[in-house]
Image 1 (cartoon, rainbow, N blue to C red):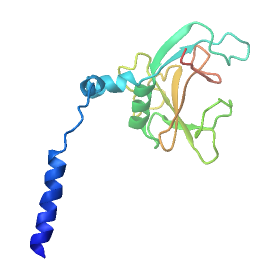
Image 2: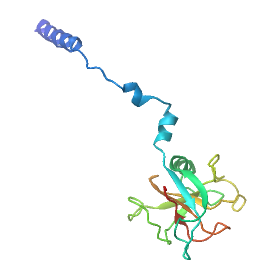
Image 3: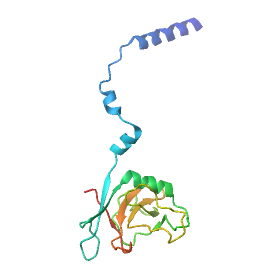
Length: 169
């Protein structure tokens, strides 16, 4: 009985090995690049502009910053959502009623905001003494599961006022 099982196993294995494989064309074409390059290829750039309306809710004015979504989310994950000396990240209650997409606009999702340094070469120093570092006008918004909610900008020169969302165009 053992010999029959062995014989059948080798017969099936031999047929599987002998079967020709179809060539996979363009495999290298789809995988060329470093992981960082492939990650960057999937990135989205957000354009943060001054508001031009009286309510300061549109994103139609002069360009303030171009922000990489991937870098903003990397900063958010670095920041987390615990208490820090600087006060950031902090809970964002969306009293301004920013139009976040799902799942950020659903009940049960805690939204956090974290400053994004224009140029994105470093992260905002979350452990600096409160008020010691200028947070600047740009913020990334994310939920407790690190889902991306949006990138926004404060309308006033002193980084105050109700934020509006930056856009991809």
